[in-house]
Figure 1 (cartoon, protein in one colour):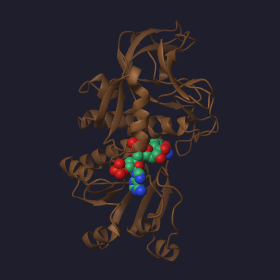
Figure 2 (spheres, rainbow, N blue to C red; figure 1 turned 90 degrees about the vertical axis):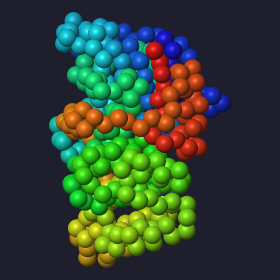
Figure 3 (cartoon, rainbow, N blue to C red; figure 1 turned 180 degrees about the horizontal axis):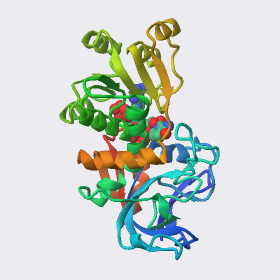
Amino acid sequence: MKSIVLQENPDEKLVFKDSPTPALKAGEALIKIKAAALNHRDQWCRLGMYPGLRFPSILGSDGCGVVEKVADDADQSWVGKEVIMNPNVNWGDDPEFQGYNYSILGMPTNGTLSEHLALPAHRLHSKPAHLSAEQAAAIPLGGLTAFRAVFGKGKVKKGDKVLITGIGGGVALFALQFCVAAGAKVYVSSGSDEKIARAKELGAAEGFNYKTEKWYKAAQKLEPLGFNTIIDSAAGPDFGEVAKMIAPAGSLVIYGTTAGTPSPINIPRLFFSQASIKGTTMGNDQEFGEMIEFVNHHKIEPIISSIRPIEEAISAFDEMEAGGQFGKLVIKIA
Ligand SMILES: NC(=O)c1ccc[n+]([C@@H]2O[C@H](COP(=O)([O-])OP(=O)(O)OC[C@H]3O[C@@H](n4cnc5c(N)ncnc54)[C@H](OP(=O)(O)O)[C@@H]3O)[C@@H](O)[C@H]2O)c1
């Protein structure tokens, strides 16, 4: 089967190649993948900057497909259904924190960037009926991360003021769509004026270009009391200024470090304003189900930057590295 494989070859780490179709084990379902989507994690794996790399591995945490068959001991009613897959592997019993055996579909287990995928049938969810396979494939990892960041950790509710940094990203755009659907007033930042304009079309109230000097002054002028919730995946040199914009008793929720090492934060300001900085990673299995319900209820359509065939998937990794995308990079497989 056609697949995108990460291998231990310094000259050519990522290759498009034939891989054996997986054999079905007890409890598993075999999915014929129609579409997959990239996350920044896939690019970190390609760069060798992800823990626990295993070679060779088929990458990809997001996908949508049709169930071809299930093992004798699994729920036969899935056969023939269009599904998406919960990318959590072994979250564990504690809803607050993933267990020590936790991993994410697509490393070290084989992922969605291939024609077939075998995984435990209890990972399957019905594809939202209002979405195409390409749209549905874009949801799982980014949707789950954004859902926990916005609601589980950020406690965003109607009327709240929210700042989402780096709005061109896959997770950030889900966060925007979820916050707008919840009735929050959302501000965004981006390195591109065009992306800010597109975010406004999706319901953002205002945007700030983080490439302009002291962009945070404009945000502070518009919302002098700050933001109830800030959703950030950049950290980097602006982090100290971003943290200053947390409203009293508000929170900054962080799930990535795309812009590198954070600048120092003003700790007295943080504790005097009863503010919090909260880390978040993915989301538990219950949150995955709630996120899909939310997507169905609000008829949310993921923002797709581009769709290309699996034969050209490696160029999508290059596009992600360059950072030009607005939303998800989708790979069409069947
Ligand atoms: N902890 C978790 O569970 C988890 C889950 C998913 C992702 N992540 C991490 O979160 C980050 C984003 O993931 P993704 O898949 O959404 O990536 P992506 O689609 O490639 O997006 C990259 C993001 O980085 C932003 N960015 C780059 N430089 C920035 C800067 N100086 N200031 C603010 N934003 C900046 C971009 O914003 P513009 O394009 O608007 O400029 C864009 O939002 C990655 O580091 C990823 O590893 C973590």
